[in-house]
Length: 210
Ligand SMILES: C[S@@+](CC[C@H](N)C(=O)[O-])C[C@H]1O[C@@H](n2cnc3c(N)ncnc32)[C@H](O)[C@@H]1O
Ligand SMILES: Nc1nc2[nH]cc(C(=O)O)c2c(=O)[nH]1
Ligand code: SF4
Ligand SMILES: [Mg+2]
Image 1 (cartoon, rainbow, N blue to C red):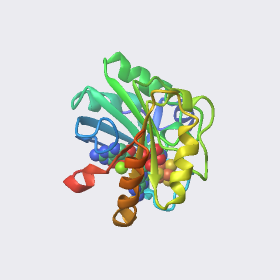
Image 2 (tube, helix red, strand yellow; image 1 turned 180 degrees about the vertical axis):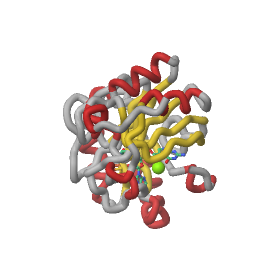
Image 3 (cartoon, helix red, strand yellow; image 1 turned 60 degrees about the vertical axis):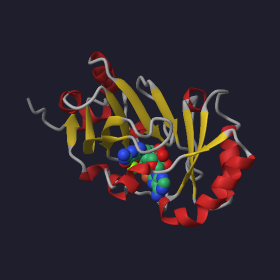
């Protein structure tokens, strides 16, 4: 049954501005290479100049969608779900993640941490951004820290962010796609010199998949 769009339902996280949802291979970080269903929620005001999904930013351009509909479709594809965006923590992730949990799914999030953490997560990928730093206790809840490297200064930022996560949180440096040829060599050198870090590549882009 289609549920009528209502701003109050969006506020409560019962409907979400859904940009797209697709079954693919997780391209990045610890789970790269494994199949997962991605739910991309619209809305982000962090403003990374190199963001590869700027079309996600304006929530108004993405239809408010009932979480029941989102979950029903997800369940047809995979038992591993990646919630991304836009910035998913713009919205209350409680209802969506509860509904996914009821179906017994493993739920991962890709987030900048710029807004307080809501929802129940089996895996938290924190990708902090200088222009809107993570808030609250998300550093203590991240399973992986994934810092995007656009220039050398980002390595310093990466170390500052690594000092804030819990021991055991995996540490990744990921080349910003448009400058990958320039930055990958110095990321490689950096990881060899500082082996607590790992390299993460956007492998889906090399595989030509979503
Ligand atoms: C599009 S964001 C959406 C989730 C959330 N807003 C965030 O930034 O974590 C998903 C992931 O892609 C990364 N990303 C975005 N644009 C990128 C680019 N041009 N090159 C490399 N990684 C990028 C983000 O840092 C984040 O880890
Ligand atoms: N295949 C694939 N893996 C991804 N990992 C994180 C992504 C994201 O945009 O959040 C992403 C994405 O857009 N596609
Ligand atoms: S926080 Fe994420 S979605 Fe928002 S602009 Fe940055 S990379 Fe893009
Ligand atoms: Mg992506």
